[in-house]
Amino acid sequence: MKWKKMGNLYAPEPLHPKLVSHAANPLPIHLEGDLFRVFYSGRDDKKRSSVGYVDVDIAKGKTVYVHQEPVFEHGADGSFYSHGVSIGNCYEADGNRYILFMGWQCPPGEHWRGEVGRLILTSEGSLELEGDRPFMPLDKTDPISL
Image (cartoon, rainbow, N blue to C red; front, side, top):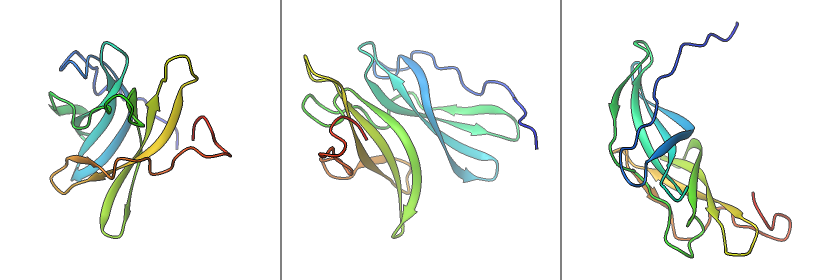
């Protein structure tokens, strides 16, 4: 089967101070029928990424809903995701749906770091951080990024 480009489904516009630009790392989650929720990483004016989403009807090839604010924001200073959240994959385990993400840190005068965090995708469609520590932290083997 040959790949068929079908056009752009969503072009980000400034919606919220935390979602000024970008729609990076799209992650589609099936809702029902031809309807998918696509989570993405948007950026603020300081280039820190938070998570937004749009709902897309793939049969019609169009966006049917644009959520106007972040569903999950980058963390506070000192957190493992203080400079951004890059969405990863979604999986199910033990009756829960999880989304992994790369949490970014840019300590002053140091190399950037990235650690993996885990979000719980609730039945209502919200995202909740599981704990306040990385799901997969840095270690001696991977001291900069996972």
